[in-house]
Length: 285
Ligand SMILES: NC(=O)c1ccc[n+]([C@@H]2O[C@H](COP(=O)([O-])OP(=O)(O)OC[C@H]3O[C@@H](n4cnc5c(N)ncnc54)[C@H](O)[C@@H]3O)[C@@H](O)[C@H]2O)c1
Image (tube, rainbow, N blue to C red; front, side, top):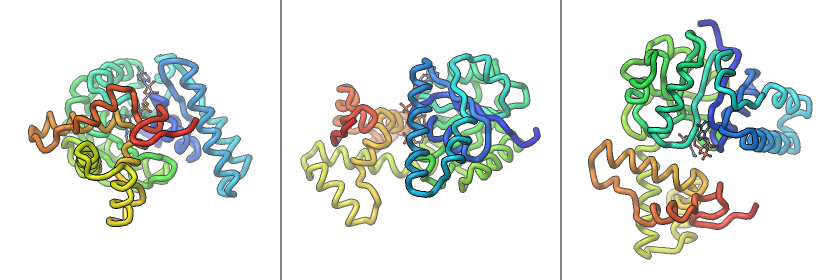
């Protein structure tokens, strides 16, 4: 395969819109897909607002902003992915949903295109097994917020070809990212370590160890983390944190990974963090 020129990003939420923005900034044509035209439109507007902030800070010119935005096209048509070289799936962290979407994408994509998942925790080998061409499937785990965070974890499944691995590493580098390889184990490197720490902070909150503010302040000032674990959970999305703990618990089979009951209750209430305006903290519009 020659170097990819066009990318489809499927799922236009926090991560999908960030990936689309960075890819467009790196000169790729980007197709951004979600379940409704309204969601895609909202994501493109959010990308525009993010780029405007960079213009205000003098980090981007108005022309560069306009050029980036002109490279992003919204779509809800599956057939449109047939025209791109590289597809990145960034839908909700749910194995059954991802399997269904990956099967659809696999059937509609060009034979030579690579299919990557931005899953935070789910087995790449298992997701690959549900596709027609598992050798072209790979994990490409961006960090949130994508325009700011340098890292991309690359996860090859058992079936992933060397060619797919090289193409993915090269794409991440062309997007200005630094890559690490993680073995295909639940949560990969970052979330195997980070999300249990967040979960422990939620246990601590539920047990009355401290207020959200004091737990976060203690961890920020006491361990030099830029954000406290509860604020970070709100930023990631409490549904995503719960889904990752569920994957760690189920797949590693150790009760030390059981999700904190309070985390589950917040998700049940629809308090998913910053994206819904309420989590451990409340957020304005
Ligand atoms: N939030 C984080 O910090 C973070 C970091 C790294 C990776 N991830 C992973 O990225 C993925 C997306 O997470 P997010 O935080 O962007 O979630 P999100 O809730 O912001 O967005 C998910 C998007 O997927 C869309 N979607 C659902 N079904 C779809 C379908 N059939 N077709 C197209 N789009 C569909 C939803 O409408 C929504 O816009 C998850 O796998 C998550 O684990 C998240």
